[in-house]
View: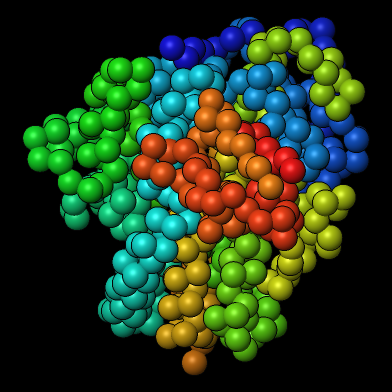
Amino acid sequence: MTQHVTRSASGSPDRPYDELDISSRAFWSTSADVREKTFSLLRERGTVTWHPPFQEQLLEDPDDYGFWAVTRYDDLVEVTKRHEDFLSGPGILMENLPAELVEAAQSIIGMDPPRHTKMRRLVAAAFTPKQMRRIDDRIQANARMVVDDLEKALERDGGQTDFVAECAELLPMHNINDIMGVPDGQRQQAAHEMKVGTSWNDPEFVGETKEEVLGRLFQAMTFSHGLATSLAGERRENPTEDLISSLAHAEVDGETLTDEEIGAFFVLLTIAGNDTTRQSTTHGLRALTDYPAQRAWLLDDLEERMPDAVEEIVRWATPIMTFRRTAGRDCQLAGQQITEGDKVVMFYSSANRDESRIERPHELDLSRHPNPHISFGGGGIHHCLGNQLARFQLKALFTELLTRLPDLQAGEPELTPGNFLNVVKRMSCWRQS
Amino acid sequence: MKVHIDTTRCTGHGLCEAVAEDIFEVGDDGMAHLLADPDADRRGEVDQAVAECPTRALSASG
């Protein structure tokens, strides 16, 4: 079995820290543009840099002396591909969370081969390019429905409404749950509980004290596992074509999955399915508002230009800002001696702005081609399962939005503090004309 | 040209299928399968699929 250790010795008290701060709550409460100023300085170091642990964590760990920061594009790709040196099993978050919570939520994203290889295959067929084309009609129909509802919300709210709640979070929710087979009504509950489950740094969702936060996080996990168990039970009796049916009947090494394994898969797919494309959509509308000339260029030939525009929106948004690995053995990385147990954190927002691989990285250029962004990962075994789904959805939604509401404007995004997902909690929108 | 898919490595990312869908297809078993031995003039696409494979499961010869 994969080890799920979230608390392990990382580094030693003797290793000196880089002077630049990327560990404080203050740093992670600013915007991506402000953080980029620090990341650009770190990239100039020309190697990976050692930093103290994230401040005031939910779980303080006396053996956790810090992490290596991977801020350069090439280093990130290398860490991603060296999955035997840099493990996912000990946890993929920058912060320490209780092992039970991590076990309940990570599934394949927190596994290493050989278990990862076998488990990932169980879900792979549901997310291939051909499969996306088979369900593209449904994705487009969902996009039409979501924009219908956004128009109604604009009218209901006097011309200005919350783009996140009324649009951005709805399309990914419907599509991932259509794939999994979670009925309407329950899918909204599951999406909400997992929004709570990923908001451990946001008092609005989880409360102030550690007891409150942990209690609320466990409650969210319990809800989702309960729902997954009940749906899997129904599918064992009456199989359908959806992903939960596949998981309910799947065998790995001659054994069916446990309810806990199906539950963890469900949590992972719910989070990865909802909370990434939601961010790309929101940051995307904001970018189109900030750069009207780019919007005008896209509007000139929506169909032809949309595929490249989607790639740039995904780079610009970088919905997942960090993933962690843990050194499985002593090794070298970018000229530094890495010790077994060291935490290694990859900063995707930094790599996506690395001048050495992305030309004019601070410019939004919807015509950028090729676009070697690493928002879906640096190419290793954990490469984003839903990358095709994300692309199909963004294409469908921005086509629908810009055809029907070409002048839709975005207000100032309200950001959730944190170092994992690049979350816009709320963002108002209105039509210019 | 001969293409080999290492079934101990492949996890069905489908990036090969995205490159050349008439050559590669991810099946219900979550692994890529070869639909046809590619002609020599498809070398460029096959090389791209080999290079992009996240699990290094593809190789080509001949």
